[in-house]
Length: 294
Ligand code: PAF
Image (tube, rainbow, N blue to C red; front, side, top):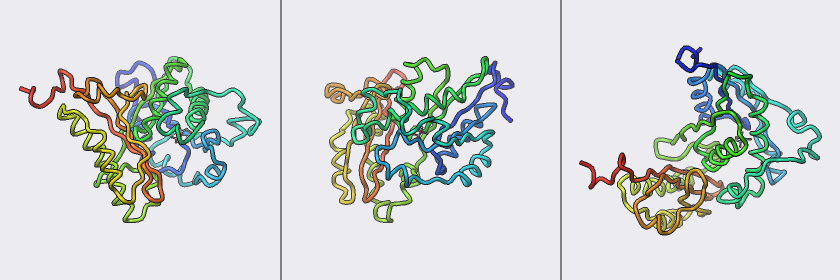
């Protein structure tokens, strides 16, 4: 087993991977990174009712605990916490009464079409962080995928706003060789829709290439690429501050990026709603536009 003590970190560490089960390669990647970086790895499997607005979605959410355990075991997870709903929320559906609010960060982008979703995520993650917190001096690290970039930004903010003594670690999203961000939802796409879905990563790539080259981003052109795809229905494509999720101002978007930003997209590619995102680097002294590089 990798030892944080042996690698120079003074205290043992616990890596926590919260999940809702129905695990796939993206989750395996989270567990693998937690395994590489910590002494003990804990995964949680809990379909959190608070983050579902539609009871039918909650009811139909896949529950595959036996195969989830196999995947977690194969990835070297030490402990699986898979509580019943009454263990997490005694008195449910009449409890919890006091919950965590994601504030305005939970109302924009994905939150605009999923009211209450991020409050539910924050509430359950706060409880899981408490449950997994090791006694001092051991340290807790909690792993989330960059694929859910809004969730990651909100949970980072919750960690600092509510003084959780732990580190939030992001795990990069994985793409298919063609560029599609991996998601369990992709299995519901027909071959034509799978092809059409590639427009999301193409649109993001056009922004990333502009940012890398120190050029002005053409967000409207990226949106038009998606609108022009007959099987796609664009919900949003926005460029925001990666920590606050505030949109960049029109003035900022009319010059090469002066601060790191995040491009987020959501679209329905019949019949599935997909999200994707990419980090856009700022033009800085260490990343000047190509014509300024010596
Ligand atoms: O990303 C998820 O699977 C869930 O939102 C999480 C973080 C496990 C909370 O239920």
